[in-house]
Length: 275
Image 1 (spheres, rainbow, N blue to C red):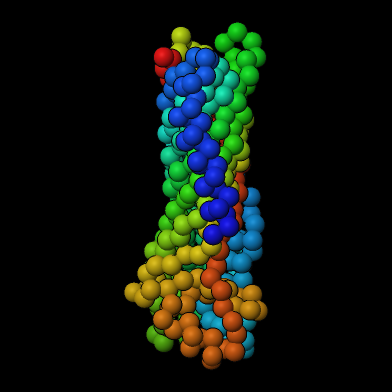
Image 2: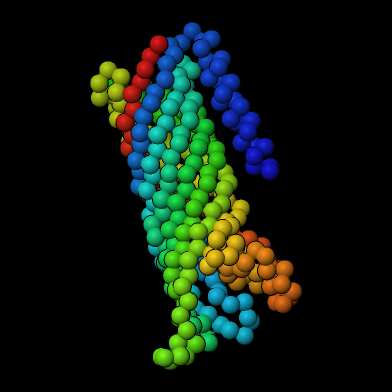
């Protein structure tokens, strides 16, 4: 709730700036564009928590976990911006951010093997403020910052196998579709080059950060979430059985959150419309 209190005044400022910007004597207008970017995600607490994954919460069973992938990202966006004056703009960005496939494998001391493949992607809506500085003739230096809201999908596919040698080996499919929502933040800097009278090409670098406090959805036919136990182990637990799991293991649980940032190198093409 505190993060929402921070972001809402910012959005109110953006909207009010658009409304009152026309009162200024400076030229007014708008810019509309598309953007594509590729980047590198910075591993953080989310990755550290997943490395503590366990298919069982029994303290008598040890496990070894390997986590790979999920580092590169792809960004797709559309944006509209309103000129407050010759240098300042406010606008809105709508986009999608895709992660590289994330792979997790686990081997336990009771001879079970688990392999999970995660597809994670998010949608975002941002309010932004930009400041432009002319550099030389048809070149501009642009800086922007803002924030907004994000919704992420986490799709899991895989299997677990073990329990003995064939034909006594047990095999379990793993299938999940989880979703979470939270806040997103952006800081960026770019160089704009005028291609035609009001058409621009942009090359920039941005830092995109998302903060999602929990994921929930369907996992193997049950409404479930990823939970973190007090000893740090992470696993999928049916939401309706979390109380039983707490009592039986004498542990407290909290839902796995995602706080993750990525650096993105992007290029954009946009059209400027002046009044």
